[in-house]
Length: 294
Ligand SMILES: Nc1nc2c(c(=O)[nH]1)N[C@@H](CN(C=O)c1ccc(C(=O)N[C@@H](CCC(=O)O)C(=O)O)cc1)CN2
Image: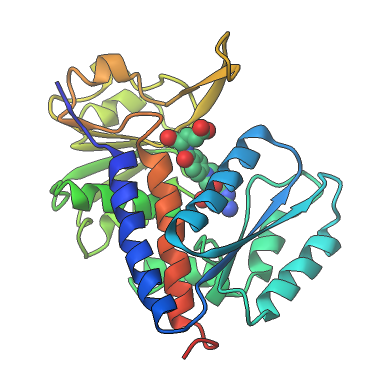
């Protein structure tokens, strides 16, 4: 039976550490860090994620603001708001919740964010710094996975890590970070995607499997090797008869994989809460490195 990598528990520990830091800042008569979240449209999952980020800010003692736009917002309106936030001395970091509606060019929006306030770590300047192992904001989900591996002291050096999915916010940065020279890292990385034939031939040989494809229960127990570390990034809402009206299902078939894996993340309560905790960490870093806070 696999060890459960409890992201919810570790995320609470991290938020307590951040809260402690913020208390020291405020005791020193300085303003707390300020995170702004931009939410476009009415996507149920995005609304829930953003509300949880605002709740996290409250928990760690940050100031937070939520800016809402209808799904019909124009690119120009969004760019105007981003420009305003870039210039605001009162804002340390901000995020634009993804996905965005089709009339908005996501790349244009990300490019418009001042890299010093890009606490999602999505701007190409920050992505490049990450790849070159320079100090910068790491994208929250990969950063959360690294932190989880670190806190559970999982050895990644020289291991074969297979990543499924090459998205700009998870798979691609994760593949770079796992191969970097720091800990956790130093893995040999295979990045698989929708055109990879016979993915199970890769996953069966992997010491670490990271799934980020959004295909419920895709990874079965017979696709992994004994003792593998299994990290599930996928979160799909599946409608059911519960009060909420849906349940959350990961990319990993937890029941069959837990019998074979050495360690495994649950959904919910695994990578998701770690993503949110890392956003708080990045915001604190933005505050500490801000030119307006010396
Ligand atoms: N601007 C961004 N947009 C998106 C990001 C991101 O990092 N920045 N990542 C994902 C969504 N995401 C963060 O925004 C995210 C997903 C899931 C969770 C989470 O806490 N999941 C919980 C379950 C929550 C629920 O009840 O639905 C869990 O897994 O336990 C946090 C953040 C896409 N967009």
